[in-house]
Length: 324
Ligand SMILES: [Zn+2]
Image (cartoon, rainbow, N blue to C red; front, side, top):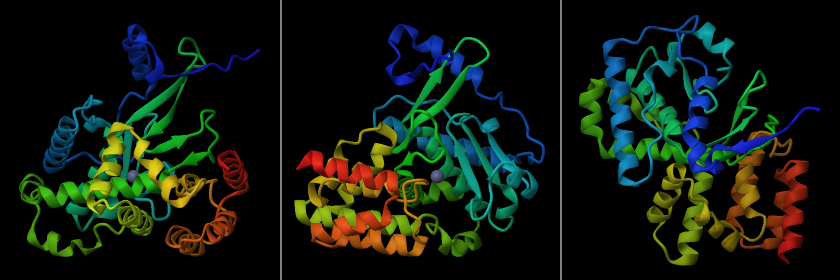
């Protein structure tokens, strides 16, 4: 009989932790060059080491344990063909894979701007510095397996079913906020370390375009909570951003407090595969925005049934029954 024994690294007793961590390192792919990967030039190398520096400073300020720097050999700058082979398709130009702690970037998509390339690597590197938990399974023997169960706010189903993710859009938009904030606050250092020209800066109007729809939804929620709780929007945003690194989610209880039971499941569905209904993206975004704008619980309940997948719809109703 096959054993299905999964343990979270975070829940591993202290005395076993370093043994397990070494095992996990062994299980992760040995970083090596991939077919179709570009050599990093000296400016790339410098840019990546600055990204590590700025993010290590951030972690230090938060007084949390650092996961260690993002290993540059795990940042793969790929050509179009390799990108496609490795799953960077459509509008996806880069991706971080928590299980193997690796970043894949389609380098060909950034031929005109190294600034945009480095900002993309900054975003992906924040995933590396995010709160992470991994599940491991049969660490001894052939069937060794590790899977990520948490990465920032992202929650993956324990049994690794591909369509069981939560908080994906929420996490991505906050990571993009962190990247923008870091860049804006340290712009002169970035310009110097990344050897950025004025033309590239002028060209940057597209920065922030990724996840901007998700960002609008998050801002809607933040503004409403700020108004109802008489807090400052920016303070709430910073708390949420810090949660990406600390893994603390208690502040999200405000979402249920001000939008009713089940509201957390609604925001968790944002851009999370398997959690959204079959609506078109445009309709989905329009409706989820309305969910957080309306003051009517009745209207929210109707919207929830329209935008959630069947699995999530059932859980939404279950949760409401439980809370009433
Ligand atoms: Zn991302």
